[in-house]
Length: 631
Image (cartoon, rainbow, N blue to C red):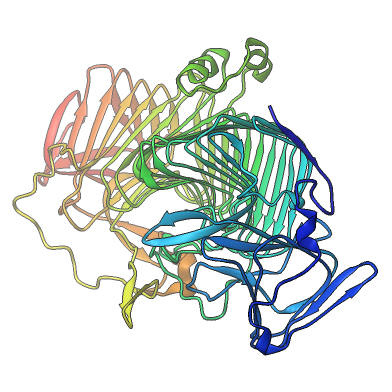
C-alpha cells in the first residue's frame, strides 16, 4: 500500500521544476512576472488569460477583475495558499466551472493543474475538484490536490488527516469504486457549493464504493455545501463522528427552483427553509448508516435521500438535529427506507418527510443491530454491537412528526416517544400506511392534540417563469364546499386510502380526515385505548393565500367536524379496545368487536345516530352517515 504524508505547505509529490518558470500563454497582455528570493510573484492585467500547464509555486498572485488563470482542456486549476484551498469561485450562478476569483494571494501560493473529475448530473457536467481522489487503484494523484491535506493518506486508508477550504466547490475526499477508510479526519470548508446531488463542494463523496468514516468531523459553511454524499450504490458507514452544515446566502441572482440541475435551497412549498443539507443519498441501492454520531444542519434537512431508488438510510444511537427552527430530520423518496434506532431526533419542522418511501422508529437492541450489521454490511464487531446497548428513539419536533406529500409508510415500535408541537402524523392527501405498536411502551404526544391530520395537499408547486422552473407558486384556499362524488365508496378501504393501525397503546388525541376529494381514513385500534375526536372535517388555514414569505403557514389548519362527503372515516375497535369520544364525531363505518366499547368521558353520555336514526352503541358493524354526540 502506498502512503503519502502531507503537510501544510507544499505537498511532497509536487514537481518542483514546475515552480521555476510560469508560462504566460497570452504574452501580448503584458502580465507582470518577476522573481524574488522567496519565490515568484505574478500580477495579471485586467482581462488577461494565463494558461498554466503544470503545477506552479508562487509567493504572491494578483488576479484583477476580468483576469483568469486557466488549464489545458480536460484539466482544472486549484489554488492552495499555505496548504488551504482558496480563491475558487463559480464562473456564473447557473454555471459549473470553478475559476480563481479576483484577489491578492500571498504566502505559499501553489497553482495545481490536475485532471478534471467530470461528474454528470441532471444534464450538466461538473468538473469536480478534491483534495483526495481515490479510484479503483487507490489514490489518484492526477486528480488529487494533496497540498490541501495534512496527515497520512494511503491507497486504502487515510488516518489523522485535515482538509481546509475557503473557496467554493472544493471537496475533501472523493472515493470511487474502492473500499476505503477515513479515520480521525477534520474537514472544514467555507464558501458555497454548487450541487449536493453531484457532491460539488462536499466534505466527502462516496461514489459506488464502500466507505467507512470513523472518529471524524466535517464542518461546512455555505449554500449547497453538503457534508457527506453517498451515491450510485455506495455503502457508507459513519461511526463516532460529527457532521454539521451551516447554510448561507446564495447569489443575489439565484432563483429558487426544484430543477435538480440548479436546486440549492429548500423548496419552501414543503414548509421549510434553508440552503444546506447535512447529508444526501442519490442513485440506486445506495446505503448510508450513522452510528453513535452527531449530524446536524441549520435548516433544510439533516439526513436526506433524493433522486434515487431503494436507498437504505439508517441512524443508530445518533443525534440528528437542526440548529434552527426549520428543517427535517430525514427525507424518504424513491422507495427509500429511513430507520432510526436508539436515536435522538430534534428538529424544527418535521421528524421526517415521506414521498414514496418509509420511515421506521424503534429501539437499538443487540438483535436489531446484528440483523442490520449483516444486511447492510456494517462491519461491526460483536464487541461494538454489545457496546451500543439498548436505547429508545425520541423525536422532538417544533412542528410535526411525519409528513407525507407522496405515498409511503411509517412504523413506530419499541419504547419510541414522539413529541410534537403539531400533529404526530400529517397526511397531505396521500396513500399512507401507519403502524404503531405500543406493546413496549411507545408513546405519541402531540401538543396540539391531533394524532393524525389528513388534508388536501397545499403544496402550490413550482411555475414556469421566462422558461425557467421557479418556486413562485401561490396556495389559495378553496372557497366552495366539497362536491359529493357518487362513485366513491366511503365505507370501503381502498388501496389509495390512508390506513393506520394502533396496537397495545394508550392514545390521547384527535383524528381528522379533512380531504375534499375521495380518500378515506381507516383506523384500527387493537388492544388500545383512544381518547379524542375521530371525524371527517373541513380544514381551514390561518390565511387564505400563502406565498413563499408565509411558508410556515403550510400544513397549519383548523378543523370543523361535519358529515362525511368524500372523506370517509372507518374505525375498527378490536382486542378489548376502548374509544372515549371527546366530542362530536362523524364516521362512515364503525366496527366494534365483542370485547371493545365506545364510551363518553366521565360525567357525560355518548349517543349514536346512523343515517339520522338513533342506534344503540353495541358490538357490531355500522355503515352510513354515523354521528356520535357527547352530552
